[in-house]
Length: 217
Image 1 (cartoon, rainbow, N blue to C red):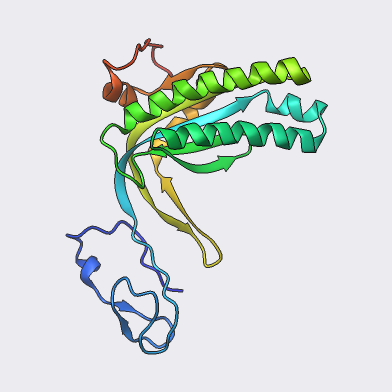
Image 2: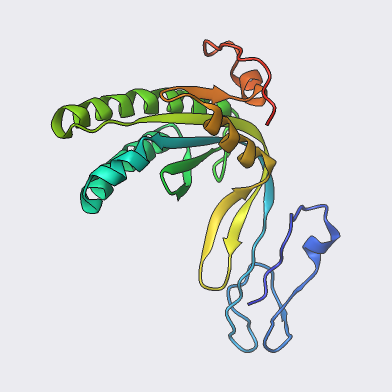
C-alpha cells in the first residue's frame, strides 16, 4: 500500500499534495483510512523530528546465565527483569521502543512530548539500577546466579514514526542520537549509567555528575 515517506512538516509543499489510491488512482482525502472510490485500505506514515532522550539498558552476564541454566528458566528470569525495566520506564513517562537480545531501548519525549525528557530518563535509570540490583540479589540467594545492568543515555534529535512494511508497522526512532546512546551503554561499567555531554547539559543541577573525560567512539 502507498505511504508517504520522509519528514513531513506543515511548511513542506508536499504536505498539501493530495494522496492517491494505489489501486484506482483516485484522489483520497488526507488521513483517510480507505479510498472512497474503490474501498482500498490506505496505509501511510507521517514521520516527524523530535528532541528526545534515548536510554539503552543491557543485562550483563546474560551469556553466562544462558550457558549454565535451562532455557525456559533463563527466559523466565530475563522476562521478569525486562518487566521490571518496562514498568519503571513507563512510570517516568518513557516508552519501551524495542528489545534487542538482552538489551532494552526506551524513548523519553516521544510519542508523548516532555520538556524534561532528559531528567525523566536519568531518574528512570537510577531507579532501574537499584531495582535490578535488588532483583539480582534475590536471584543470587535463591538460584545462585547473578547479573547486573549497564546503561547509556543520550539526548538529541531523532526522526520518529511508523517503520516497517505491509505486515508490521512499529513506532520507533531513528538517527545518530539512538546509535550514540547504544555506544555509551557499551562503554558503561556494570551497575553504572553513562551519559553523553548532550544529556549532561539538560540535567545539570539535578543530578550529581562525574566527568569521565573524552572517548573516541
